[in-house]
Length: 81
Image (cartoon, rainbow, N blue to C red; front, side, top):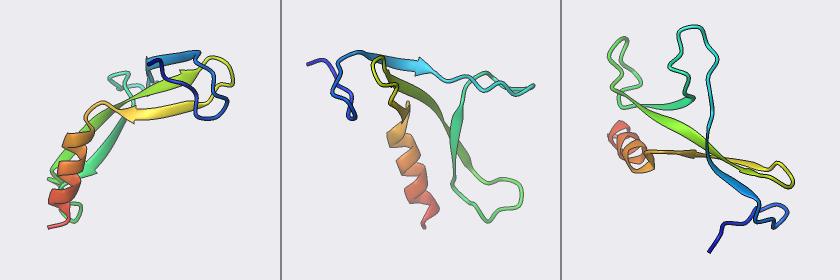
């Protein structure tokens, strides 16, 4: 089944669009970060997740998705201990 836009119902979905960070020293990917030890001064045990977008070609509604959600959630759970 082809995905549909949650806003307008269109099937004109552009999947897995790369979002580019334009920073000077960037790896040209937009990321989220989960810190396993947020209170640490230096070694925060960071885990990064690359973001990709799904864009509706009709209304422009855009959803962001992390490419490694299970790893991010596991790191989040570790940070709560």
